[in-house]
Length: 628
Image 1: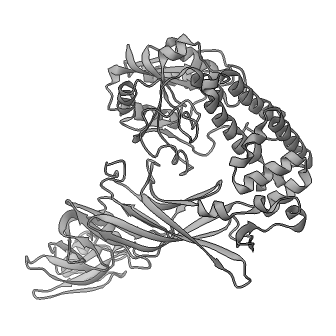
Image 2: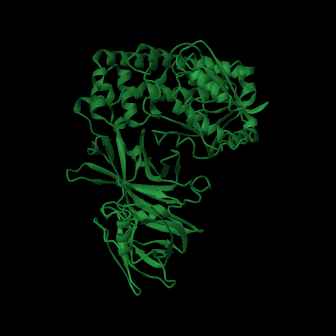
């Protein structure tokens, strides 16, 4: 009996993707003898099966089987369920990865809470918004909540109690191109599971998306897309029909309605052919009618509700015009204050709402309300209440977040958002806001410290159904803090947005501009660095020292140094190596030289901009001549 069985369908698996997956499994903190890895190859025509056999020979907890091509991951997963011996099973895609503590923490969380299903914190390479709202806190039992369904995101990257699947004969629907087979699977799970849990405090699954990954077959232009969407709705009604499951059924149907039925009517809708637009409109209208989805209209955002109303009226012509006029509202954040206080980064950013195209919002005043402004023909169809944005604006939310460039994990900081409405010169409303947040590198990750590396500071703004999650624009100068013996740095990166680097003394040297050089009390070279800084203390670091004897190039090697912060000031301290030193400091701080030259005498240190050809010492000239 294993604790976890990991089931992985493969088909023409990219070698790099397979290597990434296996490396993440080899790195698990859960002992390898406590989980098994089951590969089921779906008749790959290349050498995928042979590569899997080779990897199996290196590991005692791997099994590999091969089947005739079925054309979809469903059958391989079902075979994996039959083969599994674990208390829980986890389904992975063949090029994704687990975070290092995923299996240990996930299994212990599930056992502790008697979970039938555990959904662990998931990230997605190309989408910082993925799962952020879902994984805000640990939830031993999600059933009974008012938010999204307990199994959202409805993929199979979760821990499922194996006996639950076996007892109720739950599997994935087989066949070729069974869209949303994971949603259909999870609907059956929802029918029988009594405890569904979420674990947000420990990173679990990374859905890796690279160029060429995923499928392009989910095309709204095809009848098959809408047939499968209808199957999802029918499955929710069929399996979740009992009174005790009503809330779950409504959660799933509401999501399909808003995200997939009405979500089809965006700006991209206008780029489709006339026949495709007619077909999509007809299919959407029929699904809305057949499942009575209009009952959810009052819970929709203003923009989506307007689309629902036109769908109900059968007005494709007006719906096309609405898609053109009513584009997504985007919130843009720009930092005004980025400062350290006792090791905590305080961020204050202004927020400006525009259309997704960067234009001013089409809003107007009407009877003390703020309304959408549309063309007269569209406005004549809607009531004043349908066009009102007042409540939606009042309910806007904002978060400051940090997102890792390497792991793609996102963490939210405690944030407050205030909104205000002013008038443009033409009298139309202008919507703006301000977010304030504190980021503690030692505790923002659910009480744990951020991993080393680069973390982009982001602002996430939600207004109705429109969510924008972007790096926050910043021109605030780089600054440091030293707290509990750790040095952290924040700076405006080359793209004009803010980046935080925990334990970033090496990056700090490159981002802070040197302003003067001298000797310190210990006889070390001291280089004062620009900026206002926080905390008291010093950390060891490595300074780039040019050791090349060539007059036309640099060769920087590591030179030990101390980075000290005291009284709001920062400085570098290091021993001298000769009368002339070329050091790499501040070369990433805007338009700065690649190095600085220090001229060192017994009583003073002078600093000049680095230059090529370089000023060389007599010893360096002698060395160059001897080297030919």
